[in-house]
Image (cartoon, rainbow, N blue to C red; front, side):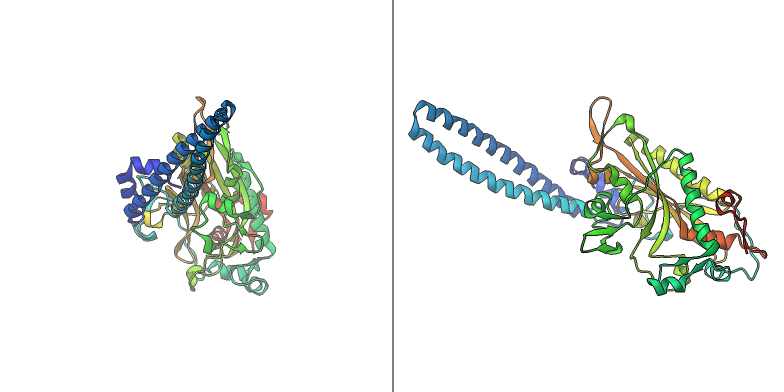
Length: 423
């Protein structure tokens, strides 16, 4: 959530930065500052009115003690008028604060200066490509055909039980899923990320805190009777562990990893690009979350990017890293790097991770602060990244590692699967 004082002090810079998102923010920000000015002026007037009312109340008490009843009664009339004025000001203040908060919830984060301009994912900037793209035989199959051939995933059975986008994993397919989850968690733990298990549903306050609400309300599954939301990512419950928290500087950085299923209603078009595991409504993902001091957050982002790269290399998958342009940047992010794995059988790149720095945007919504050694309270910075999302990783593993003998399991994963070949 944007900070009005920052917008006021750096108005032109904020307007220019938000233009990267293809957003003409100037009218919105002018309205924001007008509301904030009204809020501050109303608060000052209310404070003055309450102070005057308290002063008169003390004077009335003294006058009654002195026997000056007439004068005391006259002041009581003035006191009643002040109380009525204070009540009216309190109503105005609350309405203004609510309108201001609603506007702040609608405004996206300010992009980092390194975010390139652009409208769509075609304008994203490739910053690294690593790993050799394998050459497959002419009869190589896409992952949905491999899953059927080796009885790893049953898409039709999932559609029968629930609907499209809810696959059933069977045999070595189920074991591969479990192996990947355990391997990712262990890999993250070895890098200093403490594992947590969190709920798979969150309340509205949690969704607002990390910015999924109101921005992505239509993409989340909502349990209306209980007013709970199925999580789209572990980022939401893990980051909300620290909602309404005042940390000590000595506690930072905080690093967590968590496995959860993820649920997304987002509808997609039809075709091979969303076929099989390419887009699901329910999928498994292991997440990284960090809480940092502002001056350390971009070093932390670089560390997270390097960490995810090493994880992909251990899976022997060719990948590339993209710096997202302003038009493709998530609502809450200041800077995001996407990781994509090359799917040789589909001849296309598949997104498997996003690593983002939200700076103080989420922390402001969450009221997540820390106290410096000097005793100053300030907002922390939050970061998160997929490490990793399983569906397209499985797609990449099946397609890129297929051989005439079967599907080869990367060496790093064999201790977790218990087998080195799917045949």
